[in-house]
Image (cartoon, rainbow, N blue to C red):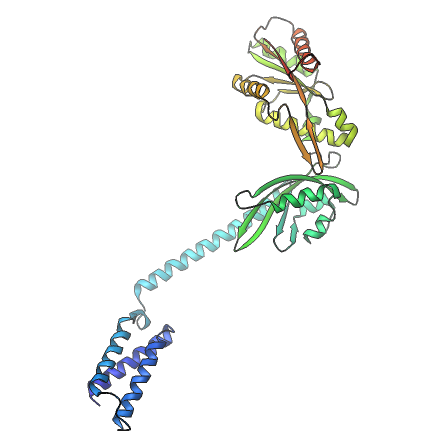
Length: 380
């Protein structure tokens, strides 16, 4: 056999061995090498003549050329560039690992500081409850199942809970609902807000839960009712505005169907609905202090000093919306709160405050009378 062909065979063999060991590739090239080697050996020992030796030589050169073309130098000599890239990736990995660990610790610390409890629902039916939520529910085990948790939900509320969770999608991942949860001391109201998230092909629902039970846990919308200024502080506030000669709108409103809700569902439900309504009203119109007062059980006074905010209220009253037809849902309880508004714009500051209050009260009485087709009446 020609020495050049032998050298080509040897080089081809070395390249294939390195490629197989370092890259785990070149199976077809190896098969070709073995086939050509077998033919050459058979030809050299004159066993039989298959193909012209010149053609076989060119086949060897061609196979060697293919192996050289697809051979990467770093399989034999480590590239400095590759080494530098590896070091950069290693540093980036360490940085990201540290960032994730920091994020994990901050997440845990945030959960511990939250006033509300938290729950985690997985798509395989498992649940995890934080210690804060366990204290609210009177439970002892952090890990539970969705079936076990749902057994404590009131039968009238469970269908709404399941339906809301089943409707969650990537496009609409958020939800908020309330339900009655049975504890050893009786039913309590839970308000749950959550979001569906996707990760690694799985789904999880992360939610916060706060109690709406006024007696045991007063930190809720109903707490607004208990902390509101009573009616005797309203005249003092109006006199202060008069002294500074600041125009304002005095708004009296009454939640007229709350007594009927109290009779049907109990006072706690009525208080919850009033608290929700007042919370919404305060968010849109009277976020500052000394602006919302409770005159009687279901009658309230509101001071609006910003003309732009009053225009929002005026448009809402004239064009309808949830200020006139405020629908609320607590578990299986669905009711509408129907408020009436009496409004007066104050620009004269010399007249007695008692007359201002009496006139606004008269506006509210007109709004509530059967002769009025609207739920509001405005003076001035």
